[in-house]
Length: 243
Image (cartoon, rainbow, N blue to C red):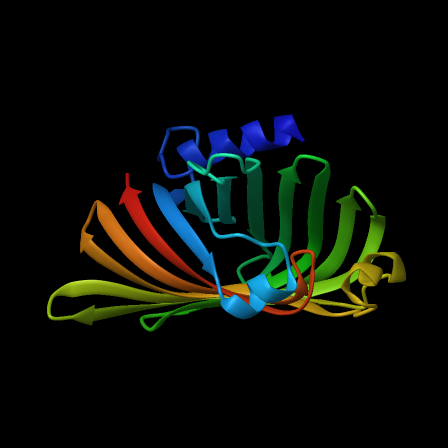
């Protein structure tokens, strides 16, 4: 797990750099952000979840053969007495021929004291891209390695989308990522009252104040996920530096 996190951190730092080794590189990005997540009262009332700060390093790159994306989070930054947690994700899409269809894969890894979970998805994706923005859905097989459950865990589908907006010469962006798990195995579903489906995602609005600085507001949502039965919601405020 440690090797995976270090590898993803390195990737997030260099993914946007058009080095000579990336002969088919088209464009990329990298950023670092400070974030504060505030759970709503309903979520806090039915779970032990607490508000927290987190530091995130993020990067991505587009190539002629496909694209890569990754992030690495350190949670509970600056909160005395709370356990530091880490979360990391890597996504890869490889184009199938000259079509918008692609081979899709992602790995998500979460660790805290006494608990860890890694989710792996292997399947297909598609890219809808235009002047309006982009929409990239996916569907695949879902495997889990967790402290209390390991093995095949049904399927996962979802998407990412982004809509750039220009207002008064200012650059804004609306984004969303969403994951939908279904046909979960009983051993995993037991954590969520036997629910064999779950949802997870975030809707966000971003404002590029200047090219180097972006601020954002996100609505983090989930259902029968994140170790809690039922619906959950949180607001996230973000301050991002773009390299």
